[in-house]
Structure formats: structure tokens, C-alpha cells
Length: 605
Picture 1 (cartoon, one colour):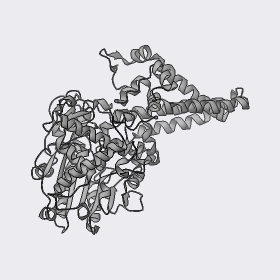
Picture 2 (cartoon, helix red, strand yellow):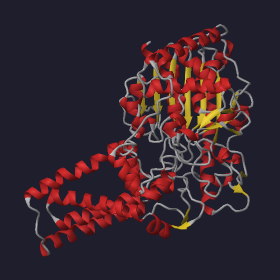
Picture 3 (cartoon, rainbow, N blue to C red):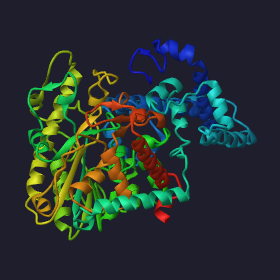
Picture 4 (cartoon, rainbow, N blue to C red):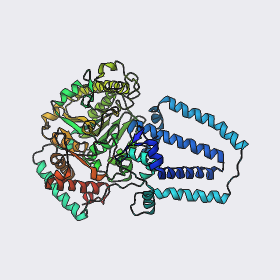
């Protein structure tokens, strides 16, 4: 069920039939999953002391769990992870993303099962457990499952036993992990999380030296800068799935859905953003853009910093803290990726989302789309821009172009039909609907920029797509990895900002990472920086873009698999970096470790 093809080649050269591989090669993990299921069943039986109820309910829950993983794999190419359990609060919207026939089938099975359980419990009563046996199992089973909190500790007993049996977490590719270990064991593999490996030389003294070093760098940078963040209005606009379909090999649209943005990119700071995800990973791109920290430096057991890291730390440095006021706007549910808690810990003053006390004022949908439009997002953002008395930071995350793309949401989508051979019906229909959404984004951006250009306050918009939609399944990612991880970005400063020091950037901006946006924005707005932002500036100017393995669609990778992309869009190896570049990369990792997993010496010194 975790495979999308009849053959699989997980880290081996030869391809296996999925049944041969599962039963013949991974039989030990099949047994492990069976034991996990039996322990789960035994726990419910000990809790209820009703055999038929326990057996049927446990089996149904297990089937639902497997099917839910299969659905997510079809959408995101990865199984369910522990970090996503926080999204259960938004169960209504999650169900809205599932095909109706699946929900109907689940409800039907539940309705049919209830009288069957009642009949079996009445007709075929089996002996019940003794009270002391029940108590013993209710203690033993949680103790067994609690051992997974040490599963990734290299010297722990559970780690040694697990590895000996054949458990292979494969954190750099969660889908392969689910295929090797089953979705349940892979879920358990991700519970014991290490944030980041400690870089060599990390100490209080070393961090003080680094801070002193980059204070001097900041002083040099600031000699030529005239503005301050406290006087600027800056918008970081994550545009859901925004990316040019024409960039994808084999895809050529009959009409251009983004003529305005394409023209605008020729006139202002712009280029290609290398995304660490494909088909998903929105919150990770958002995290990188707001903090300037790189996902590839984290441990492979930390696929989602928002839910696994930020919500557990009091100190979370980010760009919003440099402004007198910070506002977040997301015209959708606020619980996804724990954004309500994340924004609090980031220091945002207000978060506007559906159901919040700070209301989404404008609400417009397009045709049959269930999502609020980008026009809606920009109108709400414009209100905040107009209300800003001094400097303000706005984090705007749109929702209009979110999946699914096969529901025929828009009218006249055939205007953007992909032409060419070998395009299947699903891809053709999905690309048409997605591209139609892009055309509405293009129009909304044009209108928004025309409005901020009329304001007598400095406004800078950092616009970027977070990842490509997962609709190009026929394109070989091992061959076209860079293209499938390339989205569009631009930075636009309004007329007033340009008259007061803002300037377009023309060098080393063709390829950037989301963690570069703080430095790029500071440079474009001509704003002074602190030591932390000075280091980010050095990274943006002097290092190639760091990202995860572009040949994978997964959201995380081994630390040693960090990939570098130069300003020509070519992959370069770490060993080819100069001595100064390697030292800068080590400084950057020390800063990231200190701010996310270390003692916060940088802050406290």
C-alpha cells in the first residue's frame, strides 16, 4: 500500500516486485508491524475486556491508518509524520481534501460494523481477562511503546534491537522509509527527534568571537545604508505553489498565465528560488524565509521545524522582531503547522485567519474553488499596510493555488492547455486548472502593486512561490531535479520607497534560497543590519544556494547530503568551495545550532 508502482528499488540497484520485496526481503519488518498491531489490539482488549469489539475496532482503525497514509503518499509522496498530528484540530478542512467516495465508504463500514459487533458480543461471548492480567497489560504495553523515545539514540537498547531486526528509518526519504518499514514503524521512527548535530568547536567563547566578528561586518555594511527597518513596511508574501509551468520539461502552455509577473521580473530584483520541497513543505519554506536558517543543516529527524522546534523554544530569532509591529495573514485555517503558536513565539502582534479574533475582512472565492482568492489576501494585506503608522512586517501566506488540482475549480481553464506529446489526461487537466489559478494570482498582484505605488510610505514586497505542485509525475526528478525545485520570486519596492533609498539588486540574485530573503530585502530597502543579519548577508553574497537533495521530493535529507546550487543553476560540490567559503558555512552552522539547539550564547552575550 505504500508503493505507487509494482516494482521498487529502495537503495539497491536491482528492482524488486513489491510483493517479493515485502515478503521476501523485509519479512522481519512485516513481523514487527504484526506485533505492533497485536499489542495495539491487546491494549484495547485490556481496556474494554470485550474481544469482538476490540478486534474489529482495532482492525478498522488500522485499515483507516494505512489508507490515510496511502492518500497522503498520493498527494505528497510521504507518509504521515508525528509533527502533523497538530493538524487534527482542522479535521473539517482535512476531510474536505479527501475524495467524497472514500468518506462515504468509511461511514458505511462504521454503520455496518456496529450491529455486527453487537451480534458477536451477544452470540459468541468469549472468556474475559482477569483483572490483574488487564492491569499488567495496561502497564506493560505503554512501557513498550514509550521505548520509541530512545529509538534514534545510537547506543540505546531499542536502537540496537531495531537496527538488528532491519528497521531502516531512511529519514532523507520518508516515502522509502514507509515502503521499507511500514507506515507505523516509520511514524515511530520520527518520534525521537534530534534538532541538529553539534558543530565542532561550539562553545560560549567561540560564539562570542563570532558575534564580535559579524558586528564588525555589520558596521561595514551599515556605512553605506541610510534606512532602518523601523521605518519600513515589508511584506513577505508566500504565494502557495506559485511556479511557472513552462519551466517544467515537456510542459508548454498554449497561453501565458503570468504575463504581468513575467514582465515585472524584468524590471525589479527577481530570479529563481530553489525550494527544498516538491508538492509540499510550505511551512518549511516559510520558516527559512522568516529566520534565514537553512533546513539542510537540521537533523534528518526534524522534517518540520514549525511543529517540532519553534513551539518548544522560547528563543526563536526571526525578521519580524526587527520591526515595531508584525502581522501575519493567512486566509485559511490557522492550526496548520501550529501557526497560531508559532507566530506567538516569533513575536507577531496579530494573526489574521479564518476563525481568529482578528477577522479576515474580505472573503471572495473564484468559481468553484473552496479557497479564498489571492485578491482577498491582498485586500486584507492592504488594510494592514494603510494602518501602519511606522514600520511594520507582514507575513502573508496565500491559499488560492493549493491542491487538489483535479476538481475543475475554474471556468475557461482550457485557455492554458499544455501542448506536447506524452501528457496524460490527469496532468493535462491538473496543469490547466493550476495555470488558471496562476492567472488570477497574476491579476491580483498587478492590482496590489498599483495600489501600494500610490501610498506615501515605503513598502517593499518580497514575493515567492514555496514549491511546485505535485502534478508533474511523468517528469524524471533524478534528471530534472533543479527544474522541479525552481519557483519564481521577485522583490518590489514601491515608488515612495525608491525615492527614499530603496534600490533594485542586479548581482547574484538569479538563484536564491528562501533563507536569503532577509539579506536581500535589507539590501534592497537600504536598511541597516545587526550582526545576525550581517552573517546572513555574507551567506547570501558569498555562498551558493544550500538546499536539500533536488533529486528527491521529500522534505528532509541527511546533513551530509546538503546540495549547493550556484548562480548559474548548476550543482556544485562542497569540496569545490574555497577555504573562506567553507569557513563562512561553518560560521553559519554554528549560529544556527546556537539559535535552535544550543545554549543561545549569541543572544546572551
